[in-house]
Amino acid sequence: MNQIAGIKPDASSRRSPYFSEEHEMLRAQVRRFVESEIKPHALAWEAQGYSREVLRRMGSLGFFGIRYPEAYGGSDMDTLGSVVFAEELGRSTFSGVAITALVHTDMASVHVFNAGSEAQKSRWMRKIVGGEAICAVAVTEPDAGSDVKGIRTTARRTADGYVLNGAKMFITNGVHADIYCVAAKTGPIDGGSKAVTMFLVEKGTPGFRVGRALDKHGWRSSDTAELIFENCLVPHDAVLGEEGAGFYAIMKNFQNERTVIGAMAMGEAQAALDLTVDYLKTRRAFGAPLWDKQAIRQRIAMRAAEVEAGRQLVYSAAWRDAQGHDVTREVSMAKAYCGELVNAVMYDCLQFHGGIGFMRESTIERMARDARVQSIGGGASEVMLEEVAKRL
Image: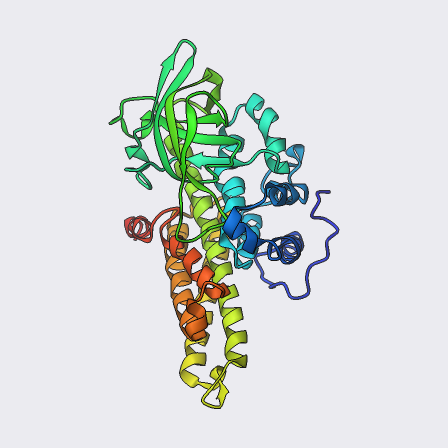
């Protein structure tokens, strides 16, 4: 049995008809890890960047193999396993740490597992699962984000391999990753979806470099980079899958990526509500706790109802995905709804903290900054709503 087995469920874990006992054991284990090994150190990571040691520790505990087979050291769980992991990391209040892990597990390494050759998987998957090799996915460019067909990085086939030229922008794990799943055009720049191919590029490959580390509004403990490819030669066997199949691989994984982001956002929102309720019950104004003000507690109650609705939307979409259903519509709804909701929750929670909520020393101030990108990254709300509209 995998590393997760043998851990008793936490008595306070949320019971749901969607989750098995194994899911609940995973939730309990991640929650304990967050309390013991993330929260005590993450403030320092906000200033200095995360520790690779914490990622190796997460790998050793099985967190990076939730969706991968036991042959690679994984647990072979379903989409709901990823949702549990993402939700609990979101509850940590340190979303920079959360997104570092989630990009590795559910947004980048999936390209190696889904499309990699046996040789590529044999070389990398155990290192990925063990936290020894950290992954990034490089699709977004200065002029192309959700519009994957619009990328302009090229990969020209030669007798010695493929020569990559171009730039990628806003790449999470871009500074410290060991391997990069890179989208490039192997056909004409205006060739549309069939011109896109995915490549596996290793750190240190000549012609590939980090252009600069990017300074962000939030997610301060996560590294984000601009990547530069200047006559970067990779071997023929660096192709992930088939030439020209990269667009479809990216589209396929968008549903998983967006489900995970929705779960992470609802974890963040729940943590914000919890700490705000605690604050309101102890902070006194005009002779009584703020919780005694009807307008305040009713606003919090409505936000709690909305978060519960968002959480159930994510759970339902993940369950249906695990059953093999097409959930593009539901996942697009969840990503748009949860990305907007987490920001609305943070706005109210910061408001009800008053002046201290505006101070850098407060948890809610950091959480509000971190949440802002949830309606942007992984598909902006406007893009998600267009996907929903197409299916109405």
